Length: 447
Ligand SMILES: Cc1cc2nc3c(=O)[nH]c(=O)nc-3n(C[C@H](O)[C@H](O)[C@H](O)COP(=O)(O)OP(=O)(O)OC[C@H]3O[C@@H](n4cnc5c(N)ncnc54)[C@H](O)[C@@H]3O)c2cc1C
Image 1 (cartoon, protein in one colour):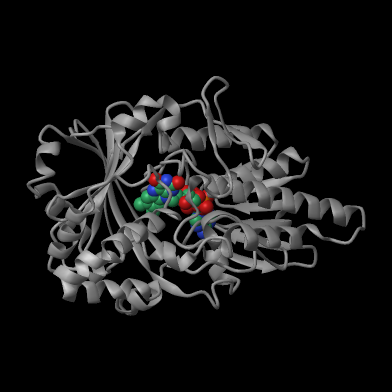
Image 2 (image 1 turned 90 degrees about the vertical axis):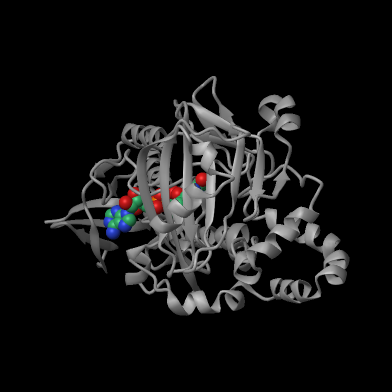
């Protein structure tokens, strides 16, 4: 016999935890159902940077309120508990395969501005999950770990969710089960979305890494493997002395283990890892679709990565969970008072205005495509021309504008000196779906 709730939330990531807490805080009965047996332990790779510290991202300027152990979103008007450490990064360093570096921000200059010079604060995501879970429990959320949701069905009064031999009934369901959401797939919410690719990552926590600039967010391409291109990331973690390093590819032919050892042997990076020790390895497979346009279907609302292109980021996931939690609470209140239900339509408008139509999703997907267009040597040449640092930034939605501007400035030089490369760069004017067509053909989503 299924226990009945006002709201069921599936997925206890940042979106689901915040959504469940908000519904509980509003005085409703909530079940939070999660596949992992320990919600606070990461089982999927995540760099955990909070993007972006020095400019609006997801319509907010978050603040690390270290004094009161809160992470706050003043534009939206809420904060969450976070009692762990942060690590700041002050510049984004992009490396070409041959080792030319382009900087978004200059670490030394940014550090002079103190805390306001950071481009990101990096929390410990496991501590963040623990804090969010504590807050949810304090708001009477009933938490059910170890339940893998396999079925969702409509009932006379709402929705039933089944998994791992248990079933839960609620008047509403918030689907916060991440980028590869089974709920979205089961309910047909992925229909009409464009599937781009799988974003696959192999990530390690390391101790003893010695990069030349310890407070930079480092990212780039290395010499290409035969199987195809991949990118790497390296930046400090909140946990003292640790660095997060990942190899990432959107090309399904790339063997990530081989990519990792290829990266670690590169003459530029190998010395950084001379004394390094691997502490933990995690991986990730993320379906990259265009967004879900409608934020609810029947009595099911989406929150977090479920409806996003690739990822909503930790900050966007919490904001959307907060919005979904309040929307569902208001809808219940409207129903209980026999008023017209308007809250869901407002939530849907917010999602479309704040995300679907606000950010160019196709432009976001263009972030990793330069290496599908240019040869490594051509990327080296391009980077060698960019002498001036770009604006300090760690915002995946806006960084392409800076690159676009830099490339437009260089167009006359490239056109004159490297006409073939100039022609290739013209492809950047195509959509990501056009540029990635071959990768898309080879790639399949997973659920
Ligand atoms: C390699 C990588 C690096 C990243 N780095 C960053 C970064 O540096 N900064 C940043 O802001 N973001 C980063 N992200 C993105 C970030 O991890 C997500 O945007 C964020 O965690 C989304 O939160 P969410 O709650 O929507 O989904 P998730 O965090 O994915 O949580 C979904 C939850 O649902 C559960 N679940 C899934 N299916 C079921 C089911 N059938 N039944 C029950 N439970 C289920 C999962 O176990 C999970 O706990 C990264 C992602 C990847 C893959």
